[in-house]
Image 1 (cartoon, rainbow, N blue to C red):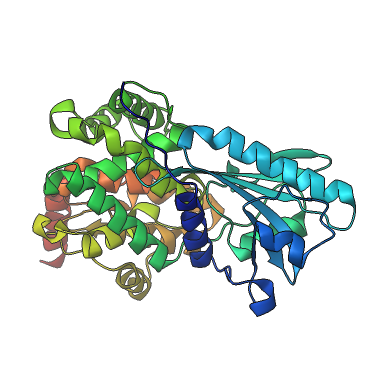
Image 2: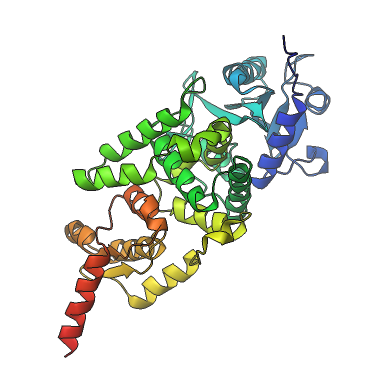
Length: 397
């Protein structure tokens, strides 16, 4: 029998400190101007918590008062234990009477499996998932998200869009994973598009024995539930995002790590915002990921696409085409500008305003996925582009 390898819980604690720091928390002791108390420090600095000798891994403070309990576990399958224990610590503190801690976070996992983060909020006497944009928070809260949750006090919070640094860190991690899995460079962008679309449908089963099949089914369910495509386009998009066993079979052991990285960015909630999640991720992925320059893609930074849409002063009724379209950055910028300048009565015209010119990376469905999450689809092809060009030449003659 193979000897079971024990993974130290300190790895999950290191992850917690790292991500919390990126989210704006000061991980120093409160006596040094920080926000973090760890285990033995808790009863020493806050003797009236009522915790005694049983203490959580972390107690986060705002202005010196405890607001979040975090409990970590060293295996991803212990996620339920982590959040349940965090809630028990919160209840113990609250029952003692001096403090009222309403946020519990459970973190479980390690580097090879990825991490699951669960967040609960104490609302009207019961612990509920903390929501943003209608979806559960799947990452350590930022300080602003924590403040907003406590202010609203209804188990919801305002979403903090991940910073550029967070996207870069996540993109580098995913790129390294895909390289370790020996996924061909040109096939890598498809992975994130497929998994992101699958996550949009729901949580992927941790105990699955056929993870690729599950992802493909959930991705297809997401696309089939969309009202923005006709059936033919749905079939083409599903085909372009399907992860085949021949190309992606080696990826299976790494998928939960990729999912945990995307969830760290609160992917489902961000997709409900005006942010171009796939565009921002791919900008970092293509610019900073190892070997990704071999794809020959020159990514247009999002501040450039926004500037071009603003200079063009695009409105509904105008035609916008993204030449050599990749993730549809120009189309997303055009969409945002048109929507901003539109009256509600003219919004239905938007689908007739966005066009794309096909390139190999577009055939992975990245552009369609990007615009689909915004609630609209770019619907043209290279043939349409040629027709638009021909009509423009005739008009100028």
